[in-house]
Amino acid sequence: MAAANQTIIRLAETLRRTGLSRSTLYDLQTAGDFPKSIKLTRQGSAVGWLESEVNAWIEARVAERDQLAQHAWESTGRAVA
Image (cartoon, rainbow, N blue to C red; front, side):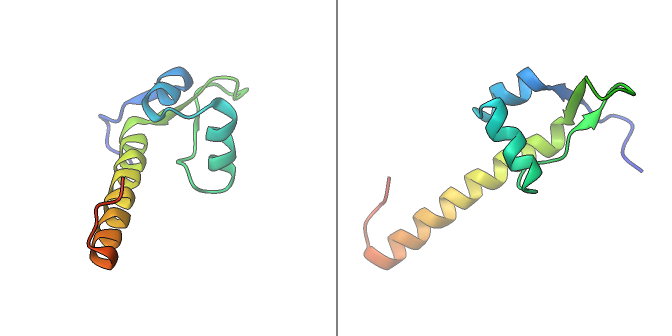
């Protein structure tokens, strides 16, 4: 069971935080590469995402970037932008 203090953020805020377009966000979600949305109404017309899952996704992108940069540094001895 999820913690009671989870915050749900709506689409506009999710797009703002990630910098993704709406279509890219949904493509990533369909591919399993972005957290699943939560239906906020029975019809499913209003959805949101758990803030903690979106934050974890962003942090994973940063870690991936840093790991690639470290690998490039170790391979070439030069920083990669």
